Image (tube, rainbow, N blue to C red; front, side, top):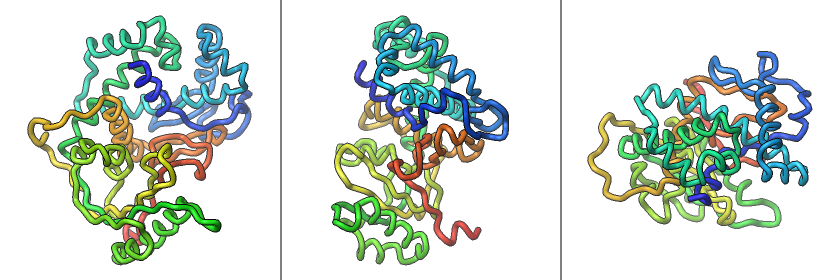
Length: 320
């Protein structure tokens, strides 16, 4: 379970430079803001204070300082705070509530509240908040598993060449489809290695061994008329999916009892992706010193070149 939590913690990691701790640089319009989510502000002072608390109280964090990797810790803290605001918004809208027993169980699985700051990478006063957010992300995913389905057409892109990476090929195809969405299938056939044209539910992909990671991709959170360019698993080589979301359906029912359980870690990943509509509705503003907000991954990135997913509006949707 500890490995699960560590992997989940990495999902919150975003790119920022060590200069952040020095407090220089521009930012959102509100003074001293590391990030702004809707009407809520994440102050730079609070981020710096939490970094210092962890350095003072968690030996593992001091290793980051010794290795000149404090930026990793700062990224993580900003990311958890931004996503916390989005999780609260999602919970309010859908009537979700973290069960205290589940939160306690999660804390026990990482060695108790005393060890949780080391496992979660947050100060002691935010340990229950972090654990509660994890539980709520799972609930958000479960809430949507049988409600969301999409119809999309696209292709898998793989293979590198001396002149073009797989990512560059995928982005080229994505831009072509965005310019001419009515020719999406033809363009996919001409440029892709494997053409896909299907309608599928979120649970279907989440339950499949080969497709589970796509359930946690922007495919199910992007608006209709959006081209999704995503790398489902950066750890598994240069495979990219380019897909035009032609239709996105959200039903009110639960769809009945689940036939196949979904792993807790995957549920949390899906839950993060399902925060995207709330981020779009509220608006997320990040200080440039921390990087750029990437709506596709609901994350902060150092720059656009390092994110694993992109959203390209089609010409028709952008003109509406």
